[in-house]
Length: 525
Image (cartoon, rainbow, N blue to C red; front, side, top):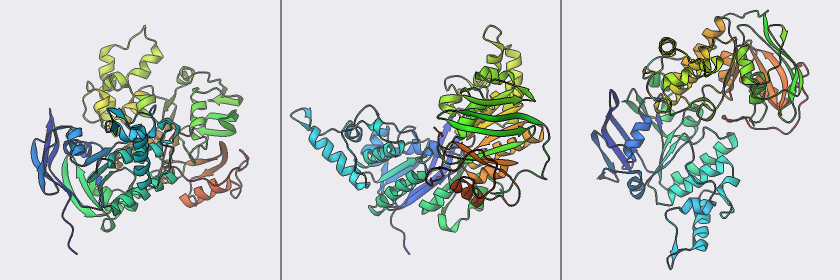
């Protein structure tokens, strides 16, 4: 069957930055009425290719054709005017303005030199109806969920008669229902003949929605493939350049843990998490699984002193402890990598070295600065150990890929040699290669005696890493399950759905509430 003529063709695209060849002879073609996935590890060149296409960067080599005509956009505005729109992971809209204003901003209909508010609202409502949305377009955008804000961004994007729609990680903060809503919109836009370039680290989503994919590795083209003809294991191998057992459990033989490190008895906080009992042993990886809003992050915050417990007792190494502040937790050698590295973890305008050294400096106080020689030695060691790329401690951390930024956060805490490392969604939004490296690091730390509390919305990841799994529902810890051969994702889902009633788990709370939907990620509160 003959393929339609491409809407967009990029041929031999090259782009070089000082010391880095970001793109080397990359080709990409997008067909009308098709979802095309752009795949690759962080640093593979995906973002650079999109920025070259949309006029953020000029290409050093190669050509771009849109509907058979050679184009070279000098700015993102020129790309939009040419019919190429981009919706980024972090919605770039004005939440204090109305929905209609966000849809039409910069293109407001006017009458006698003034904004025609009636026409603007009507146009916004019409555009949203194309996306099967019926909203009060006069309401502030901030009054709607992030998923709806994504749809508003897409409505704005297609308002320019887009021929190509680029969706860059649009599902990273959406739950399963919201993802399905977005996919319905994408299918409808496909029917209208729009070519959609879709970037995501969620492989299941790629296989559900995309028709074709282009894979990049180290700035070079690996190939273009029909999604249905490329098994996931082969996709992963092509992305990282080596074979990967996708669901392999990383721990070896079963271990016996007999040295409790952290013991929580009836620990809880009103409105956040019901009283729970949990023991974490030295060298043990304890996974937390649950739905969006189930209380996973709330447990982590209590154990790090970021929130104050309103009930219960806590012992560390057999000694009663009261964690009133994170600094107190740090004195007990407890470290916490929060789920949002951008707002709670990194300072983008500081260098890699300065970000890594922050926690160590905080333990010493600002009147006793860490000597520069010691900084260089420690930072160099962890940059090498965690394979932070580029391996330049003096680069601004904001210029690193997501996976390498996550490694910087990990390095900051590993310098303190913690006894308990709390990881809240440490692999969300990073590529499969970086994800695998972080997972293997967790196993190595555990084998070395470090206890790890591991939180992830991806049940397969929890099963790969954990020695036991705490299951949460409706802000209650409802079950604690050993991770043996009998524990599967289906068992975890059944436990979540039943509130632990069918598993005979110790009474950490009764099941309550209606069935929910497993989240793709996002803050629990």
